[in-house]
Image (cartoon, helix red, strand yellow):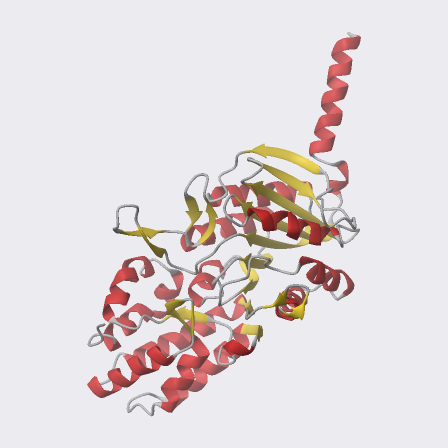
Length: 404
């Protein structure tokens, strides 16, 4: 009987360790970092967690990381606590979860559900840490010389070959919002190329503020120490946390903690998504009535628009400016004002380094010719942004004569 009691007692303490009793306290914020190191970014995972440890969780903020490491061959959940050692992660592992497929959107939902249950808070910030490629697949050469399309929008898991499509990201955020009982206060992609209208459109019904980069991110990613320092000493509203990330990120690459690199970062107020959609719908309706000369000028504007790594990811504000300057007959000036006002309300913070002086904070799909359009048109047809704006139809119309 004593032996059985000892076993039960040990089991109780083990469960208490894996599900800490202090987690029942409802704090102001829980920061849930879905850190997918099952790829060539693995070495930056420990770096960023060590940055988080410079601040650590406190009486107002839980910092919880689901940390997958390719080199370690396992995934664990870490409750980040303060320490000053930048060479070792010393925060306690509160749960070992085996070899999780971090490219499966349901794994993200499981993490958020677990985080909300064990670390309840009034507000939640969900961060996906990994590679990203915007709303569509990247194209790569196959092993036998053919072209292979890899659907790797975000969270690439090299162990499984899986990743989340933009639609799946939207599903994951919708299910996560249900798990916490309200919209996610802030969602951020510590990943490349995700500050797109198309990506935001999939999360507009489940997220309040969206943070991401129009361009690729350097390997070091976000400056977590600076973000958390400002977060814990400021007002801590969702708006202010999103803005703090934008500002601290760009500062860190302008001679700050991350050195010197050309970067972009934006924050969106997704309550303004409908107005943005309406303005793009109106713009597309105008573009769909152009004559041959007008279409040629519209294509020229597309080809001169600021892009981000992929030639069909264009800056909306710059595109609009070039359309206005082209003086195209048949384009309504009131529509330009409508789009410009919608973007100003939607993009609540946008900071870029000098190489991106023409960028306005939000990218959208701007294929430069009909061949490029056809490569992704089917996938685009399934996006919420397309359903709300009909943008694909406008593109097909004014690109009809454009071929490479």
